Length: 207
Image (cartoon, rainbow, N blue to C red; front, side, top):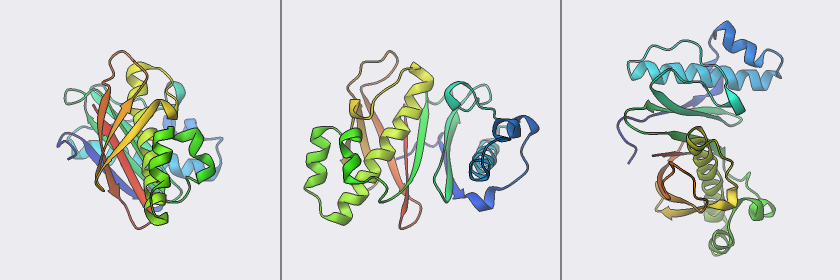
């Protein structure tokens, strides 16, 4: 269901350690090694994705609030977990924005649910058997993270986790609805779920 114009890629961080532009390195020069490796992986994967779209790309710097500064005419998002980097990019002519998040299943513990999910979402999670509950909680969190990355470049507004709700549509799709009215933001946004491996999954949203 992902639009043809949206390029989504994921790869292990260790396979993406390529030289980056000096201007990019300045963004993380004083960071810990783990953060440096994540940053390098994200920029490397972003350039690979843009090249696949026929778009030559130089340095991808970090703008306000850590949002990547994409080449003119491009929208996109970068995400990392402990093992992988993920990227979603598209021509701005095809969509207004795109967001992506990658997570390892099991990190969204039940004690964190009240800060992330609406009461209705918690009731839904409580009805699920443990393996399904673990997966759906991870998807719900990743979907909301991806949504925030998608909406922020457009609205420049903060949206709380509990101001958005996720409706599951099988194992590969979901609909996210934002309760907060924001200019330029549709009330309902479609999203896709992709499994990287048995423990790692990606959620991507766009509008």
